[in-house]
Image 1: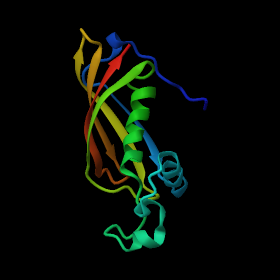
Image 2: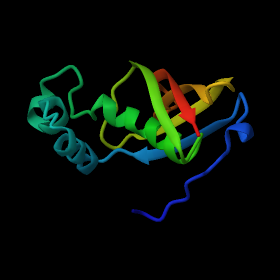
Image 3: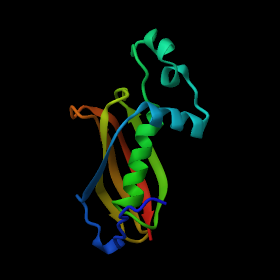
Image 4: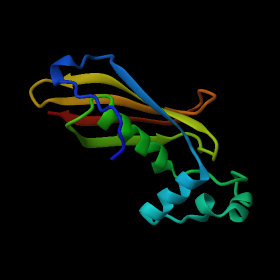
Length: 142
C-alpha cells in the first residue's frame, strides 16, 4: 500500500456543503492498466490507429477510469475511512484524453442521521474546468 494520508472523519464531523477533491494526470499507461484490470479493450481506448478513425480522433480514457477517481475521493478524503459505497449515478459529458488533468470533487448534499448515510454530488472536470462527469452518490459512513 502506498503511504498516503487517509482521512478518518466521524459522521458528526461531516457537514452539508463540505467538499474534497483529488486530481490526476491521465497517462497512456493508466489507460492501458485500466484495460488490463477490467478487460475492457475497446479499441477507442487502447488502439491509437483505430481511435484516429473515430469521432474523438485520438485515444480516450475509459469513462469508468474517471469515475474511479470519485471513488478514491470518497474512500480517502471525504467521507474517508470506513465509507461504504451504496449508490452512484453518473452522466458522462465529455471524453477524457491522454494528457488531461482531471479533478474529481465530492460535495455533501444531505445527511441521514438515522442511517449514517450521506448524499454527495460527484463531479469530474478537466484542466480547462470543463465538466466531464456529473453524478450523485449515496454512501454509508461508519
